[in-house]
Image 1 (tube, rainbow, N blue to C red):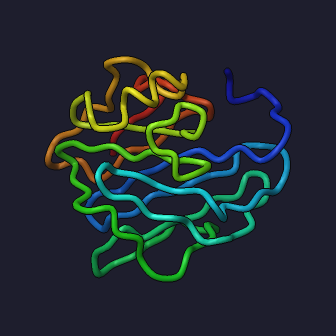
Image 2 (tube, rainbow, N blue to C red):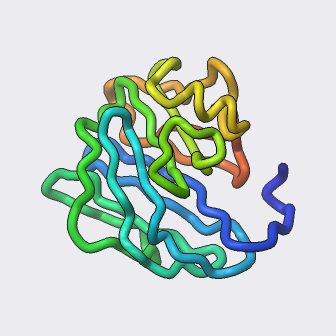
Length: 163
């Protein structure tokens, strides 16, 4: 899909993961508002349910994943407190966004990214669901500050870059 395609409904995607002050950003790339209540984030074996927060079309939600500093992108909504997904490191990891707590279900995973290397705990589920490419990962080093999705609906590592 291209970033100019119109999609009906609320569609949530992981669009940024920062490592130094661990944070992730979820963006509603759909054309209607939606609520993140009932959605889960996963970096196996850590899982966190997202609180209910309304996200309009084109809006983003920044989520602190730990650390002492939280610098959300300008204009992003934020979730109070921190959600702990274990260590978020530039050396390698994964984050999946799920519509339910059925973490091994290809029907439940809606967005996914892995970095540093491939074959993390939920990459097979993401590949089965068609939200990630088999063997794909975003290249990072220990010096990488974060990764960002370059185009919406990117279901492959080639649609991401590191910064």
